[in-house]
Image (cartoon, rainbow, N blue to C red):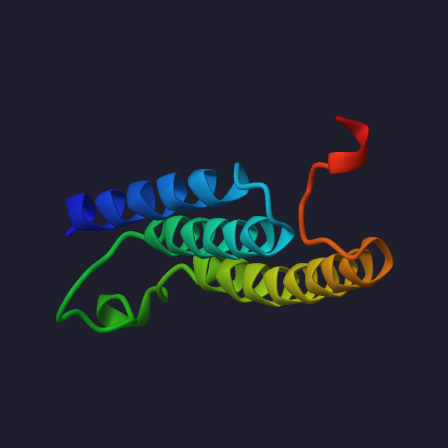
Length: 108
């Protein structure tokens, strides 16, 4: 199961790197969003994956580690805010310059 999670994180990270290198600002924002999904999956996988086991440890000694779930929840909120800000910034730049291109063609 860990190999599957590692492969999915790798594919998401590679797709995000490809999108971040595009010239259009919407692709860059989409790449940031996909990268945040990869980071969320990585943080979630840090909590050790167990199937068919209860969240409580035997005899009530302790509970499962809630830190990875809390980190993922925080990362989801921060990723949503970052994506919303980046989209507004990209739309504002497109309205002002009239182009969605990251590199200004007037400078070339």
